[in-house]
Image (cartoon, rainbow, N blue to C red):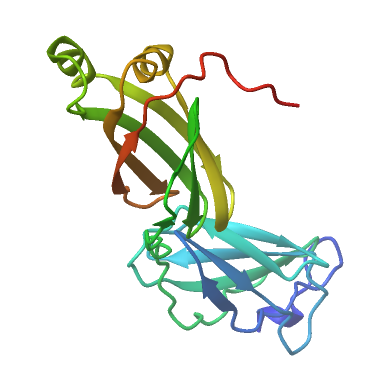
Length: 229
């Protein structure tokens, strides 16, 4: 067999590797190889080949595994290996058991929102988020309340009261602060404002979901922002 052949270097070619094992991932697979039994030299490296794609990766001893990327999710692959040293390259091993790369599941977008708190110059909301992603909040007036003049009602009807966004790296509770615009603050000095606060969370790799609340911003006399710090 090839395991006991001697090349011009005087070194025995490695024996055929043992059948590799593979673990599939997202568009990739990690393959583990091992020295075969029988006479022959010690392998310096292994070349792993995927079927049907023909893609390869190299294992350099003392490592025992390598990863082939760029595979097609949903397609079954098997893998063979050859062993190489200065003497030459062995014959190919038997094929591994077939594995099928798959895409990770889409995150379930189930976020909850506590009742927003209204302050003279901002609205704060506590959100419980299911994982990493981006939260966006927009407050828009529906109609001003009955006490508003007809002119102010028309103006308020198209007013964006506040906007905010927040990027999060993990699941859990976060606070998002929607600061009122100067126009909205000025309107509140004259009358109350009724608005719809829409909060949209888009998980990384997932689908956006929105939750809305109807709020009334009561008339306030506070003209300047509170001192912080």
